[in-house]
Amino acid sequence: MSGAAQNAEPGWIRRHRWSLPSAAVLLVIAVVVALSAGFFPALGDQPRITDVAAGSTAHYGGATIRLVSRHEYTGSRYDVPDGAVLVVATIAIDPRGRPAKGGSLCDAQLVQPTAAGERTWSSGYGGGTGYRAGLDAQLNCDFGRAPAYRMTALFLVPESARDAQLRFSAPDQDPQVLRLR
Image 1 (cartoon, rainbow, N blue to C red):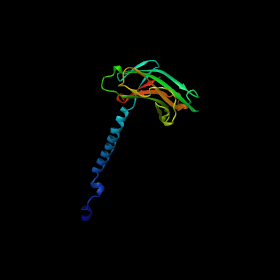
Image 2: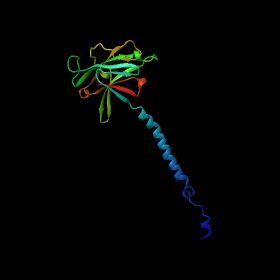
Image 3: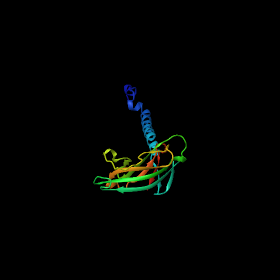
Image 4: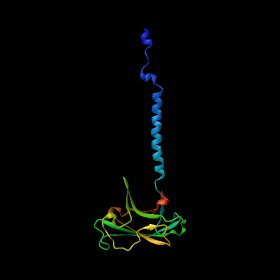
């Protein structure tokens, strides 16, 4: 062996043979930590659903909630467009058991499970379609209101959503929701 070959410096990869695998391990750890920080809280935000049978009472956020009735209308009685269904749900709300920390708005939605997730409809008159049912109804919900009252949730949905589930929620109770049947 000549002296020049023995004195040659090792290659860059050979000089960094320990730091390169360490950097790769640290990169994998950083990716796992970054993903887990966003993923695990998202699991905690998934709704926890409590089923409530029709006519039964549920205690929700200190208030008492009960599905009084759910009716579906088609045709000319409420001038429902062809291919649609007007779902009318009456919900009794008694906020008297709630702590006096102020009001909280609540919401009713129709939810239809699908292969791609869920389709949802919020309570109101036709979701911006301009449809008006001609019903005198209490459309919003406020836990700060007293005394007990009834809320009428109206949903104009396609006929394919006739079997959609009624969900009741309030922001200060997330992720807990009621499924009223």
